[in-house]
Image (cartoon, rainbow, N blue to C red; front, top):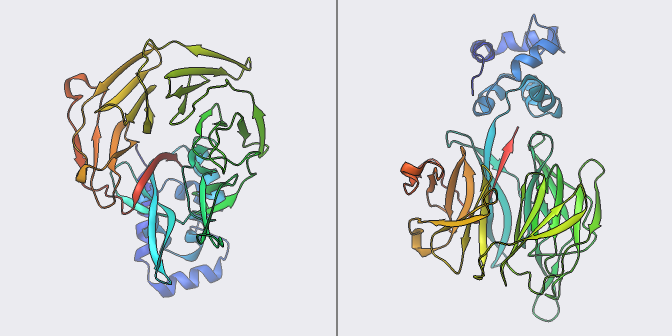
Length: 380
């Protein structure tokens, strides 16, 4: 992506000014971002600064730092067009407290060159697993954590309380902070989920006592409200997952294998016959250029679904470090593999390039520090 060099020159000149002149300038014109320019023009200039230069730009003065961290900056940046794509890796960390390990969720953000541009603060609330992670907002700019399996200290029996959560949290990169959204109507974990035309769907899953849920829900970010949605009654919904294709919701089940398609425009479901009866046990998947890539406990390699052709195939992958499972994501329109354990380099492969489909490249810059990663893309 091309960026104008003008704001970078302005930034460098501002850094080179001595401190006394900067202080005098701020005191004489307390509202100006760049001396001699109206604030609306200055905001346009600063909005063109690449994210990788934010740390340098933030050291120019307090006003720049405040503006670069504001929602106003995000709004101006969307108008000017230089929205960048970042790969966000959410993962588990732990520390010791009172001689016990305490787990938490946090994230690391990588740009298109693989540079680690910062961390996402810890997810609020108790530690959770088997949750959903989606991206909502205009252009895909906010991370949403949905539900999950929560374990809280304090049960009189074994010291812990375990339950399904209805909590929903949203991370806004403009403010670098989390906030609570409206909770789901039904607490759940181990559910399928996908975003279709800006609406977030969660499909079935399990309750606190481990029973299969028959309900599904849809979240509207414009109203911050959840609504119940009917869905087909499948006897076993374990390891099911979902994705969006052509404004429809595709739900892929495991035992037996099935594909249910929901059309929000007509509020109807139909089953897509895949012609394959093998069992599925999918533990990680990603969608890139209208193809679904997934890892399955029952088969080696990387599974591929092409919903346009209703075809299934597979691609060989290298052995994960320590024989741990890989996690799937996207980086620069390529499939990215991240080991389940932390501290390992990521791998990428362009599987649409038939001549090099079996070649995987080590990305030395991307080495997540935590384990059990979940990977999403942010545009901001």
